[in-house]
Amino acid sequence: MYELMSFKVKCPMCGESLIDHDQLIDNESSIKLDIEVANKKGTINLSSIYGSYNYKANIELIPNEVVKFFCTHCKAQIISDSNCLTCKAPMIPFYLHMGGKVSICSRTGCKDHKVEFDNLSIALNKLYQEYGVGAEHSNFEGERISKKKVIKKKDADEKKEIINSGTFLQTYCPQCKKSLIEDGMLKVKILNGEEGYLMLSPYLNVFSSKSTVFLPEDKTIKNVSCPHCDKTLISETRECGKCGSPVAKIAVSARTKLLDFYLCTKKGCKWHGLSEEDLFDIRLDDSDEW
Image (cartoon, rainbow, N blue to C red):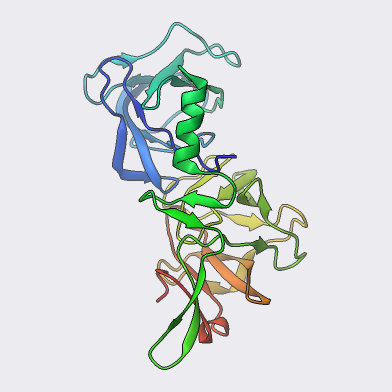
C-alpha cells in the first residue's frame, strides 16, 4: 500500500536524529550508529527502508554475533529489555519521528523486527500524506506525481516523446511478457550469494529500492531474472553508460509498443537508458544517458 517506507528515527536516549543524509543505502538517507562486535569498534549505516536488511559498515560483521549499538551523538548504548522472539538476542529500539518506535534484532543475520505506533490513526494519516496511494506518488521533494505524466516537447529540430520524471512505468519481462509489477512495485528475482527478490520504485527517476537479501553498496548483482519464467534479464550486448557494469533489460510500455529499458546492476548506480533505435523518438527526462 505504501510502496517503500523510509522511516526517520531518533535516539531513544537523547532524542537526536540518527539519519545520515550523506551516506545513502537503497538510494535513501541511512541510519548511522556506532557499533561494537567481537571487541572491535566501528560505525554502521543501516537502510531506513522498512523491510530492507542492507547496510554498510567499516568493520566486518561476523554472522550470528550479537552487535552492540551506540548513539553517534550521546554515545550511550541503545538497548532494550525485550529479546528477539526468533533468536533471543536483545532488541534495539529507535524512536520514530512520526511517533512510536521500530525495533531490530541485534544479532547479525537475524531479520526479526517490529514497528509500534503511539497512535495508529495518526501514523497511518502521516504515511498516506508522505507516500500516497492509488494513482499518485510523492517524490523526494514532496511533489505530487501522476502515474500517467507523459508529455511531448519540441527538441532542436524534431518532436520527441518525453517520458517525464515521476511517470509510472508499466514493466514486463522481455521474454515471457508477463508484468513485473506486484503490489505497486517493480519486482525481480536476484542471485547474490543467496537467492531473493529486489523491489524497485516503478516511477521514473525515483530510485528507492529494497531487497530480501543483503546487497553490498557499490557492488554489482550477480544475476537478475524474471520471477515468472526465471530467465535472466542480464543483457549480453549492453553495459552501463556510467560505470560499465552489466545491465538488466526489461520492457516498458510507451505509446503503442514495448521499449527495451536498461537498468544498471551496480548497487547505488542510477544509470538507466533505452535502446539506440528508441532514442530517435523517445527520451527519458533527467536520465544520466543524455
